[in-house]
Length: 309
Image (cartoon, rainbow, N blue to C red):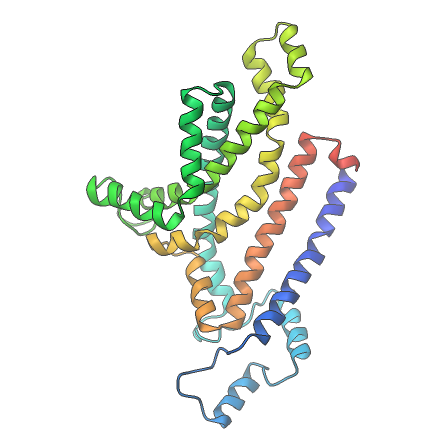
């Protein structure tokens, strides 16, 4: 098991290196630049700006300098926001996105697994049809529709929650409820459907029939035997889901005015702010590969056969 963990951990670094390299060259060779304006700058001024940020050097040299800065933990200066560097903008906004993502994923897991198990145990009954109908809605309706609908009813019509903002103000933790529900809706739907299909498959397996033949209680069979095997597909889904729920919060953060990383991701793309784009890409990629690593470890703990392969 230890060798398996070490092998998977060492595999993180080549993956990140490939992502950073491809992203760097794609961004740099794309048309346009961070200093392009409607009215072109004089050539002498442009040369001075490019020399200041080492953009006058060959592309491979720029890549080497950038990788050296990353190894030292420096994501570089922002080309548009001159007062602070990229590290400040990313790590001052990332906690809000992470908090929103963790709460949303927790809601998705708890409600999704519960709904999936109930649907599987009450197959083709009212509870099954109701929970799967909600799951279909969650998959079909985009977040930029769910968010305003919740805002209209919960904030404007019933005045139960604030329309926007973030925690720490006069409303306490209330502002996080609507964005968390909105962001969790899609992943709740996928987890519920995955859990239902997996539980139904496990319930038809031979060892479950054997456990019932021995006279074990149904609750013991479900929680001790069925869920351990049925949750394997859900666990494998959680790694990409967590990364997706962080990156997918861009739309939700814009709707509910959440001070997260999403706004810098959007603004940096519009401004062609190379270093800020790369910083957000690196952070999102790191979250993805780390969560996939965690999922691999949890998967191996649930199914020891994985660690021996």
